[in-house]
Image (cartoon, rainbow, N blue to C red; front, top):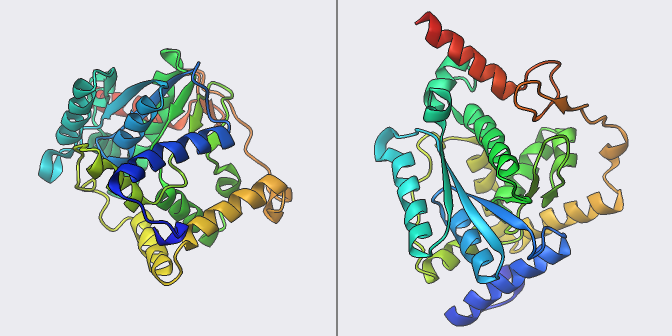
Length: 300
């Protein structure tokens, strides 16, 4: 690991990852051993590894899988659900499964077509639905914290894209911890300082079976483009992604992000239907999308 000037054998690497995770949890005051944690799992290496790490560290943690109905090509959703359930069964863990189509009558690709969001790609609808449902389940089932498997590559790519487009409000909002407020669950990212290749190595060395394929709709996405650009920088300057992200967090903590004084954060209020926060005057974006889907089904 050139960015750390560190080389470890298998046994010490598998000790180092949980030790560092525990350090990040304490540093950013994410949660305690007394709290109930819900991990959003997708069948991928990061989320399953996070679940594995938190169990090894002795936390009270269950999993949540959202069945999105994305089954183009490799039956992506079916396979990712199978691997998530397999991991839970093998480790005697509880996995909550929420099927979007059973809950709302339409899967993600269908909702994307009906709502006309994303210009033919369901990514915008997928992100909206996942955020809404993860928060709903964490809140309704009484979990203290919702944890996601975002790694350093994910966080650096988001920060890079928001900086390139100077999306000030999104830049200010980005953090390893998003506090609970106005019907929103507390959200944390314990893997935010691990490189993607480190998490890949962890999953392989731990014998965690995960889905290798990307979502079939991910090809050509901006996030992958930003990751590839940052990878080129990382190759030339080992540690560049970590420095970029950590310096951002430090500048934000010390109040040295000059945009902070010039950006007014959106006022949020509870959605009258689901109770989750929204900046719109009436229903939140998710509830409006479902209302439109139901109206379309009635017309058909």
